Image (cartoon, rainbow, N blue to C red; front, top):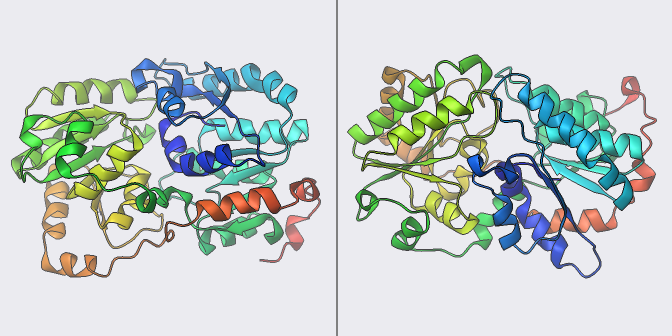
Length: 384
């Protein structure tokens, strides 16, 4: 199941391996922002990857309100239930912490389908609803493919039997090993960058997603960050925010900023171009999980703005900053410091080595998930 560009990007390598495997019949249930022109119709990228789509279920409510995600989840529950029941897969897989994975786990629990949750056991201290959604999904899921031992321990504290938990590293990192290197000019052309980005101008990627507690501040954070980055000589390349409440104001702000010659709004782009954009960029700014989970694989410095992502494990390439101008300038000064540059020389991504997809596919084919389906264990007696 996939509902948004971000979860597809995390999982696409696993999906491609499953789709190519002669022993596996693999189909995608596509919903949510994938089907929305506002968010770039990323279902087209799925089709370009040659994936077989079981169904496209239009669920996204674009009301930009607190109830919109809940209404979207309700649409997925009612719109896809009979499709899933009719197809009756041997395994249902999903990734992350959005409302659609909670629906996927519910399908599995009530329709007697073993489920595998990728990226469970993670946790951020930002108070965002995605954290309890992730943990609730884990409790409903049959098995867990997690990135690191810390995540496995957290699942044990939630009462999950260790037999259900497989530490494989992050499958999101394999693309940095697999994707061929494109030169800077080809990469910038691929994302539609403006002429100002060409030559040796330093590149900054900005991806900022709406967070409810910072909804009123988010446009100012983005405007301020872009202004300071341009002031410091960067060309700023901005990605599309996700579909959470508050996205409308952010999109309007980004579209206004993109009128400047020093700013490119690339929106959604193909995997090869985004991977190479990260390789050629000097800096990533915003609050995307890509900054914490992926940027270390290419030695990319990151400034995480605001509350989102705080408390998650990250490499020494990440500097946490408030969203005001003084904090952003201080974070940029820290990244420019000799101490920071020295630390970057020995940077290792704590989430994996870039060879996790094959582990995931082997486990999906070999583990007897039917034997794990009934969750008879008492959380009081689970031993980590």
